[in-house]
Amino acid sequence: MKNKRLLEIFLDLAHIDSVSGNEKAVSLYIQNFLTNLRLSPYTDNSQSQTGSNTGNVICKINGGGNLLLSSHMDTARSTAGVKPQLLDDRITSDGTTVLGVDNRAGIAILLAATEHIINDKIETEPYTLVFPVCEETTLFGSRYMEIDREIKMGFVFDSYMNTGKFIASSYGAAGYKVKIKGKASHSGIAPEAGINAIVIAVNALSKIKTGRIDENTNANVGLLKGGSAVNVVPDNVEIEGEIRSVYKEKVLELIEETKEEFEKAAEALGGSVEFVWVWDFMPFKLKDDSLVYQKVKNAITKSGLTPEEKLSAGGSDANSYNGNGIEAVNLGIGAQNPHSNDEFILYEDFENAFKIAIELIKK
Image 1: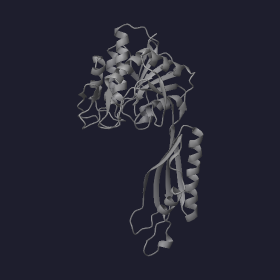
Image 2 (image 1 turned 120 degrees about the vertical axis):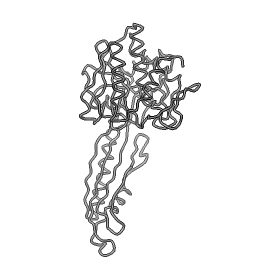
Image 3 (image 1 turned 90 degrees about the vertical axis):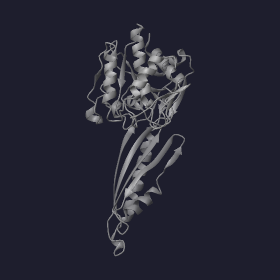
């Protein structure tokens, strides 16, 4: 790998264990790094919403401007004991732990790019660096980030896709929880006195839509628990599921249909249902003539790559930013096989993502 400084920063970060909600060690590393560049990083007060042991790290360069560059601080799994392996074309772990490339690679790119432009006295646009907490669990760091209202564009360095690809549209996801109440009774002595909550659940689940609903919509039931013993008619069941779609209206439609099926199944047998749902993240789709769309295409092209727009079925901090009125894209940095022990990043992708970051911020 030619960019030795980029690699050095990444290896520093990879050895810091900092899972979701416990990002303070990475936060301190970032703040110390930026302070040594004579910048003034700070943390916001988002931990009251996120439950993390630190706020999001924010740092304004040349006044902050109207654009942000973002990379989250948490990993989905622990990197304790990681042993990075520098192969001919890529960085991996030794296979016993995750590498943490999602998203220590993104952090390294933004830190190395900022160090480079300062040390080489490259003239840049004003911009703001942001490093959110809790991306892997709730996206709450970016959702509750306290940043200037002047910021209108966001560039998130977090996608597993190869460099050149960027996510300009994404599914939204709504999660729901169902509590079904029946009536307990002895299944041998008085089964007719009970109301079987599991039967209610089964009847409802046989009617609701799951799997791939259409080319833009998915639904899933992921958790189910209930009952207390095999000789007791079960009086409670709890179910959790989600609905994802490119279209907000489709999610709302399926949420309502799902709720109605559970209510009808409960009413038919004399039980009751408590149904609650919340947006995990909102869908977004950027127009191809928007400033952020054109700016990312231009930066990728100037880096010697071919821009390629992609749709994502997963969420990222870009969903939060768009939901908060900041038009944002998620850029491919090549952090492949995320969350698994065979995570890796190709040197080529790593260095190209660094070039794209430079192109986004320089004049």
